[in-house]
Length: 213
Image (cartoon, rainbow, N blue to C red; front, side, top):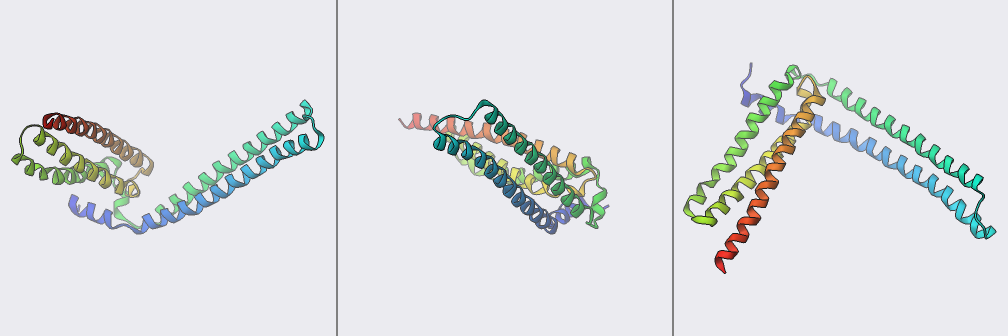
């Protein structure tokens, strides 16, 4: 079996599938937007008919007519809700068909193996950027702490970017959906750590201002 580094490099080179998935998403997102626009147009038409009736007749519609129109709006919403589900289903099927056409030996990777490869590589990216914290050794006190925090923040941001690159490459795992969910969870956890670090930087900046005063 190829080394972990070679596997990661080959997976990252796979830009073609990203282009295909992006194209499929764009196609169906346009279709969804047009569908929603048509739905809103039909509903607005009914609402305008009520306004026109009031303007022309100088009185409200009967409760029976209002109920009839309300039901019609509900029917329109239900119809387009089903249509939206169908479009999303077609999009998912189109993406899966594109993935199934990939002739890659890495398709056999178990989800755990794929995630282990990605996690190890992402950790190296994080550590690579974090190693730049050596410049902080020249500083002292709060300024030194602040320097470490900013280096950590940058390292976490780069780690998140790196992890995100692999979400659209989960077709290399046996279970694409499970792989995407697990990577999303890892990204979410890293973002939480990033948010905590960002808050610590704000506090550190405040302490440095106090020292200057």
